[in-house]
Length: 331
Ligand SMILES: [Fe+2]
Image 1 (tube, rainbow, N blue to C red):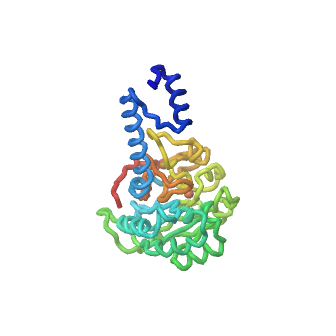
Image 2: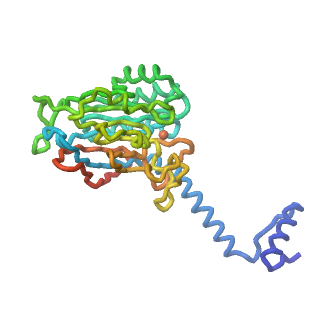
Image 3: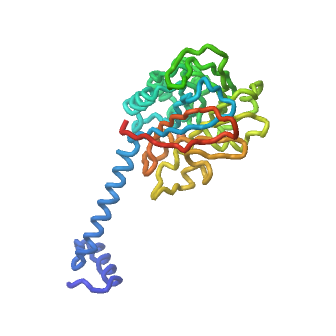
């Protein structure tokens, strides 16, 4: 029987034939068949790229922030910022070794780790920390937890940090006295003065542990302050009298999948404001990392895993941001 020519009739004819167990061919429509095949190939290729290539394709972003009263003897102080590692099969031991190697090659003064070390399995925390313990920075590695890290207990996290030699600073602060400083030629010499700044950390906002007031209690308002917070929405909780010059955050993964550079709000904690990069408020600035790993679904599109190298400089007037530039590499 000849198939009908009209699309509607053709569809019903094919459906009837298929229901009767007769092999249906898109006869007389080679163009349609070709287009369908090309579309399937593009979709398959795109999914393959998003699942296998981009999540492994680490990008190094460099951002410089001007900070009021920042000690000029440590101008150019470097903080390597890692977030949302989500240690799992896709972002496992080998991948994390590459992240550590790449981070160490940036020669940071300190490393800031802003949470979500694991996905859903608390047993992976120790494995993740064991790899991260190879991170090298003269002023150490500083840690706060993300919402996923609450699958493990706080004692577990404290013990894992202790074992790795990291500083766990949830809802507290410390004074950092840098162990080296930069001279005009960007070389390092040993510290010989009282140069210092404050590093503070807060717990996760979703888990109800985000207490900036507690974290900054007793801190010196004359010292520049950098704060670690997994969730960037923490900015809304800061009060005008609390001195925080810069917040480092993660949590959103930059949206993970960004067709044509646009993010899906649902993948960014419902936010259109706090997605990735620099966001400024009237109180302070936050740098939001796109994160290293993936969660929920293991895809990245137009949103590569990120190691951010944050550089701090003294500024005499209002704090500023020197536009970021990226260095990329397959890592
Ligand atoms: Fe995360």
